[in-house]
Image (cartoon, rainbow, N blue to C red; front, side, top):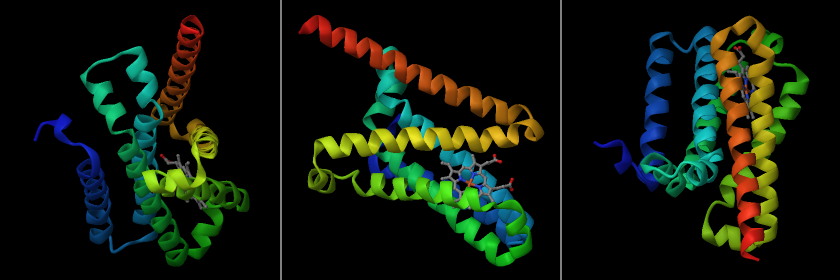
Length: 204
Ligand code: HEM
């Protein structure tokens, strides 16, 4: 199946199934041990990061580099965002399973600050996912929608950078690569935003 034919709900379904199959296979084989749950938490944090980045950069990259891929990305940004939300809820489910499976290891791995900051992230993900439909978006109005989604994506961006950042020193090149891509993503958004403002001023 050509990649670009993955659109809309089909994209959501396929990405969700891939994430579930990729994690439940190894978890099942390892009898859902704490170690395998910890691996699955890391896996879903990374799948979420990739889906988040695709949604986060969709409009900016299309403005900067209009091509087949960025057109696909922009057309599917809502579904990429919803796929990110799904991936991150799988992350949350594995965290809960990890807490139940190894409470001591969980207490060692998760600090109270992580829970507070992480819960704000989850509250924003729920609100953004819930308002990703025409009817619910209309309920809160265009202005509130724009504020919520702008604050939400930038908070989550920061949370990813901090989460990868605290692990980068011990974790090595993969973590630094994620941080670099997150920085480039923000830079792309800023440049695209500036170009849009300049173009709008010229038109006025
Ligand atoms: C209450 C909420 C949350 C808790 C308790 C939590 C807990 C965890 C745990 C236990 C790990 C794995 C630690 C390890 O084995 O090394 C992890 C990894 C991670 N989490 Fe979460 N998390 C939460 C929310 C979030 C949110 C909202 C984000 C991003 C927006 C996020 C991003 C990450 C990232 C980037 C990693 C590192 C993955 C890696 O090692 O490659 N987490 N989290």
